[in-house]
Amino acid sequence: MLQTAKGFLFDLNGTMIDDMQYHKQVWYDILTKDLGADLSWEQVASHMYGKNVELLIRIFGPDHFTMEEMNRLSVEKEKKYQELYKPQLKGLPGLETFLEKAKQKTIKMGIGSAAILFNIDFAIDGLQIRHYFDSIVGAENVKDSKPDPETYLKGAMELGLNPSDCIVFEDAPKGVEAAQNAGMKAVVLTTMHTAEEFGEYSNIIAFANDYTTLIPLLD
Image (cartoon, rainbow, N blue to C red; front, side, top):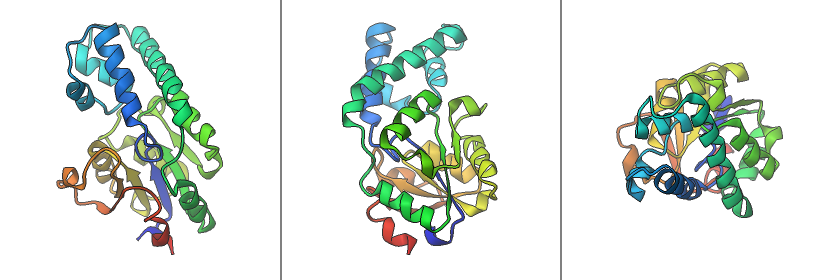
């Protein structure tokens, strides 16, 4: 099915780069040490989806911070994450070969992430892969984040494709749900979640540890 798709839409964190443990560490430090939230590591991990502002609202409520304060905390968090992760920045095994092969097959590609553009730029420019993507949709570009389908529907629109012609690459159940809500099939990268955690979704066509096993599926 991969070789017949017209478009690929990629989540970023945990999907193209295996960095979620770094995000969790920084969020845990900020939430518990800086902001005084009484949360365990597991509780912090359970909130790790959607926009940074949404995460803060889930934990502290809608009136605890002003929007300006939440935006500032969001940028501070990403600066700390980038400082921590930059020495380790690399794509999942086989990623660039997969992107190059898809490009040669004239498959259009985009990024659909809940990350802010500051973070997306950090990753794709650090990996030098920006030239593969004709659409980049980040947190600032949508009103509702995953599992709402807006991120992936906007990506398909920017690629000039019907949603049903696109395949989404994700690592998280909420992202697969967003793809399903958008009418798109999904490939799951099992960097953070096991296949068993995706049992409720009917749109998954493949599971993979990285891209090395997906490259032959483009033939």
